[in-house]
Length: 118
Image (cartoon, rainbow, N blue to C red; front, side, top):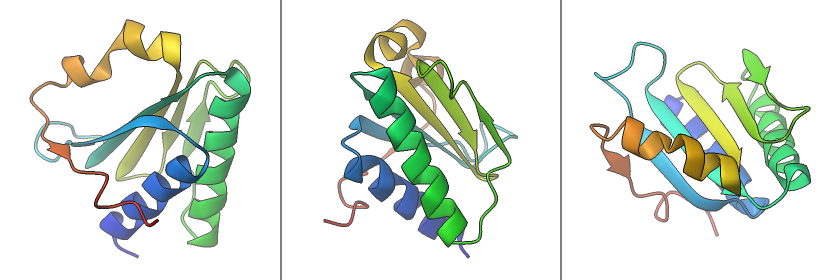
């Protein structure tokens, strides 16, 4: 299974659960931990958790193990490690506070609109 197919399916899963402002950063050459970061947010902790559950379900359907999930119980910032793809699912307030897009400003953004299956 290709990393790009996993990325596409995870972005679609987030979109299906109404994640907002989905951004994908191409981390190749910038980070040793992953090729891609998915960053998105939701307006409530329950919705943040629902997005995480959907991403986990999609990865399991693809027979891709979720290596680690952090922050699920709090529902403010869930970090999911899928190997070459790391997903950051924020509550709206937390996303603006941590501003990962600015922190990783050197990373090129990938057009997710064209990647999401509608």
